[in-house]
Image (cartoon, rainbow, N blue to C red; front, top):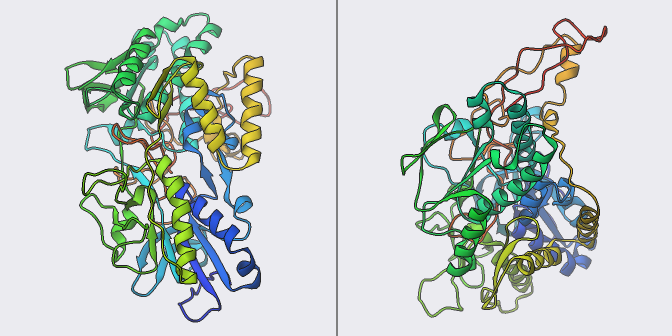
Length: 536
């Protein structure tokens, strides 16, 4: 029985309902394993799996930097949940509250504001809480207005369009100050997201510069700001130093033990006193647990994560389970008491398997299994044919590390369909030249029609950044897509200087500004000309 607008309560429906909150690593892999193991029960109606997620797809975040660089098509970075979880009920919406005492979850959907019936009350027998994490921002002046995130496929593609468009602006402007600001790119955060995004985009922009008559690769300025004394701590100190040397060898200005103080008026001011006028400031400096966790009656740690046992059950809360970014899971592989597993993708995927098996064991009355996994190591890409790796004690750099990075993630991306498509794209990319097209107009697809219909162009907004939704969200929470997804927060996995996790869900923050409308002289154009491009 699928949930309806009236909701359901435990005990009024046949079979057992397993509610999975979140469609990221933990949510998708847990539901997928449960779907396989409960196939007969699902067909007979003795069991039901309901997945609540703000997006109808799971994003394979390790491929976001390559999607931004144009090496992989954006649609191949995501996995459609309805296709993979074809025996589950997929509810596109946001979980606002969880009342485990009553075994109900309050969910808002795309239709909540339309039908006037209010939020869904979805009852459950077992619940898996995996909403992921959201961006952790700081009260830095100007950050909410001009910062750009890097946690979703929308942000990755928006950032690619933005970088190429800045090169277009620099090529066309007669103002040296505008040119310098357009060609200055500041990235804050030296974890996986920041380093890989910067490295891939720098590689792409350097290649793209050859097609501009008045821009040389040396004209572009790339700055990486990291508050600690090293980058990529997951790959070890030695490989972190190598990564710094590799980036600096490509003229990337790596600032260690440095913080961003302000970015008001599109000027990045660092703690060492440096000032950089820039139209591009990418924030990848950490994540925090989803705010949904605070809207539950479940026990939390001081850092806002769910207190869990080694079996991935929430402490003292039968029938509640959690893993990934949302869960504080004891690490049984170390002797140090109180140590928790790192909230990264490597643990999340493996925890999902154990979690699903333990849910099944609970239903069948069997003993539970404790999660135990020794960290295998980490790999990171530094652009095409460049990388670093520290796997099972072995250190690799350069081309071998890059090849290991691609091989590992190709083996981990879900479904054979996605594996084949990604491999085909990599093969074709090796035979043909890079794509250097910016499709920034996709962010306002109705602009031309609105102007033709007399509605006028898209309203001007703030310059130098990507478009943001019409409403101003809480600066501590990533903006949602322009289509409302409810009041909750999307599952996402991000990265921070100390975590081996990856970026997770929101649309690109920032605003664009529309120049005065021009005309191409076509008689069918309305007065004022065609809708303008929106430089950022």
